[in-house]
Amino acid sequence: MLSGLNTSGHETGGSLGIAVLATIATSAVGGSAGRGAAAAGIGDAYLAAAVIAAGASVAALVILPSAKAFLPKLALAPPVAVH
Image (cartoon, rainbow, N blue to C red):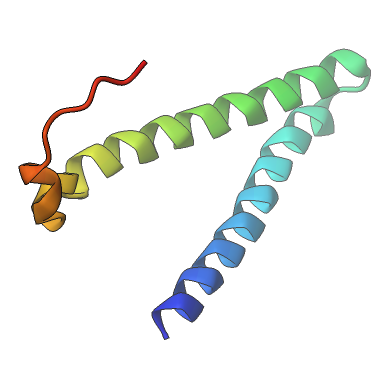
């Protein structure tokens, strides 16, 4: 059941994300014509996507527990150098 909920959330989030970003991209083109307006709209959509990704990253750092909290064996494992 949780796997189905995860998949449904993934699909719904992707669909809504594309719809929102396409709306942002085309909103700049509606008022003016030309390639400059289209490029500005796409730039606005990328900026919105970056802001959303940064916000989600900060939220994940704040909300989600550390790995040591739910993986007790990880706390007992010796540190490993990553190259």
